[in-house]
Length: 280
Image (cartoon, rainbow, N blue to C red; front, side, top):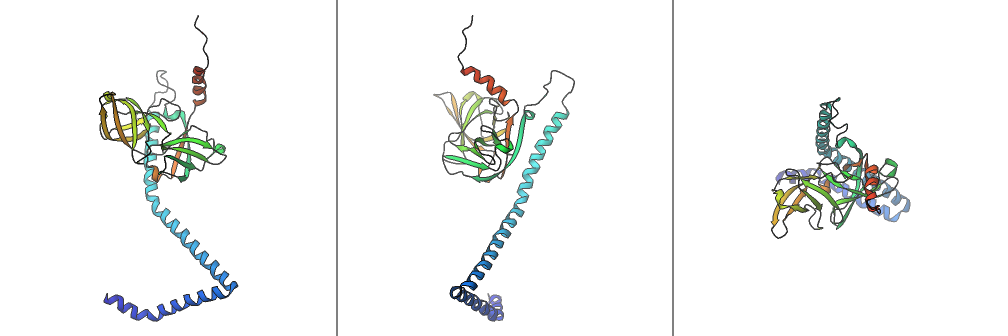
């Protein structure tokens, strides 16, 4: 405290000068239109420069977390490359293309995101000009993010996993039992898994992954970790509360995925809805 008072006693004249200058500029800007506009423009320039510096500063120190995420993603991709490199090339009993390699991945940046509504959406900076279509899956290096619901030329709207209309087919990684991943609209950190048989014996900490029973997401991709598990004796199902592996509140970059054979599969399955001829 003594040091502070000593410092103030040394620079009190400078402080008084600065205060008087501020008062003078204020009086000039109010009484003279031209000078006021000049001062206002200068002030706006300094304010804009400060915000720009602040944003660059924040982004710079945010690069560490971004680099960590990129390292994890690179590790995952390297693992896939290693897997493909070990595939026998001449043996016909092996598939020509792995389930993950039958998908196209399009990177995009998140430009808007909501998490506190019952119907939450994410806006991304890629649209139909980039090959984005409705019903494409969206995910990041940590897990599933949502499903594309609307598309313009340069942007797309993603129905987040934190949307009560979103339902994704999933399975318990250990047992392979299937269920539906659906948010109840309350806590953004909790999403339920419904209709999963109690024979799956899901435990806290178990991983829930995509089932692969649709053309939207690749199979076995992480989507959540089991947090609370209760068995409902009357129904034979488990009530499972999970924590999504993708933190929807902190996503900056995502991948839009499209199954290469999606149109062929969808066309074939659409035939089921048409009237069938009677067997003869």
